[in-house]
Image (cartoon, rainbow over all chains, first blue to last red; front, side, top):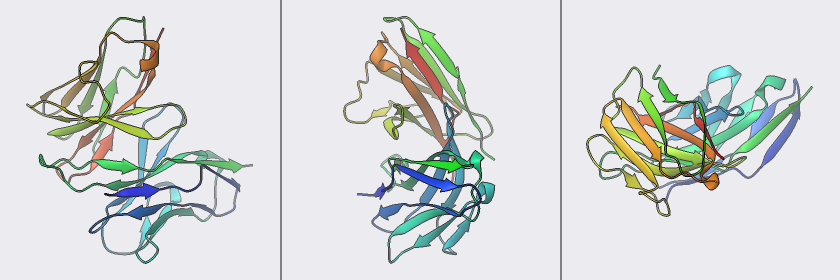
Length: 117
Length: 114
């Protein structure tokens, strides 16, 4: 079964410092991986995805993620954190398609990022 | 980009009443939509998969008679919480699956049952 793990409940980083939010995955076949951000009382905002191609994926708001097949990781990174980046971040993997052509997403438990001024 | 809306964004109701939440794909057709529930500071829990023109598929442990799902058109799915109770208070998020088999998420609906 497909799964993702986010080992850190919370990550604290000083403004201006680089940030990393970790995600590891377990899939059968080729992984379709996603990162989303959620602000309080809001839905999920898409940041980036990996389907195929370059291992370094660039996304919205200056975020990027590195797909590492040997380590089965897809860590989210940003070179210089902003206070406004403080939010809840979710890693997700797309499940194998179902009978009706449905593709469920499996979410990690989420990591709360706190950027300190 | 693909946009999904939800209405209402916030609803407060009395215990025992029913509440309907709408999920619309605004600029694409979605034969499949998903309904999630999110408890405070927790991840999204998939409740059900909604397929246009057929019955929804519920995840294990989700009461189908409690959470009625109707996917009447290619752009609209509704979730009705019947006889709501305080424990149904939660944040409900829908998503719509595009023709590329990716999900686009709505902004969520905060339900508070008094």
